[in-house]
Image (tube, rainbow, N blue to C red; front, side, top):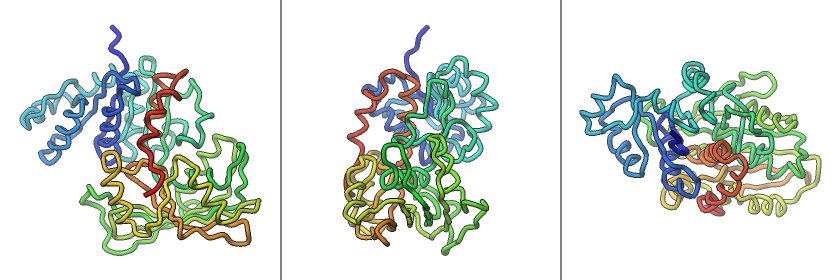
Length: 355
């Protein structure tokens, strides 16, 4: 019996929760019949969050051995965990680092003949073809059943390069350098906060941190070999990541041209604010689920051009929102491979031009 288009989200953290909300709110326009989500732990503190997702229209799924504990919290699961996987059309895995790859081996490979597609987030390198909306759409084919939506900072770096250095599918980037100034943890988290600035190490001999490695492999799907290097550090703040970028091009560019390119890219938001808390607050007040869904927020006053071909500046990474539309785009590709572009038009309303 055909149960319609069912999207099942596994994980309800920083990415999973707003993704479930967005899927529920736009499901009619997206042609989705049902949204389900898997919650692993029956925590009393999470009850309001779970009720919020249920009230939005999503159905709760838990493992059999935890059904009673959820019921004791006043939460009635609709489906058992593996049952929810079996009946889904598309799976979006939003679990912590490494869990998506384990789930692929334990569950997804077992049901891949019945499920249209699987999507994992951020750190699950090797899960499937790397993807970011607007960057490498043309490389995704009907054969790609496993999609790896890249991380928040990879989205940011990728759209910076795409906006300033890529024209007519050709890269004009001679050299890209990035410093990822990371927030300590998300505002919803209480663990892993750092008391003072903490610098990272360069584990990759050629590219430094994994941020450059990831953006290199993302662009490799387009047949583009980037010369990129990244460093990273953490600050004792919870608001947003910030990236300092230095893009050296093989063509001339002016400051006004760089600004114009940023302003014309629908996936880029610009701002004249220079403090992360002000940008974050704007997203909380005006964004869907309090999130900024643009891939980057470029700080206009920081843009500077050196020697007529090198653009430097700062931008903020909306780490809890900028990958969501890539996940929904991948979902729609699986559900509507021949008409997904029309379905995705409804997402434009969630993007901001200026913060």
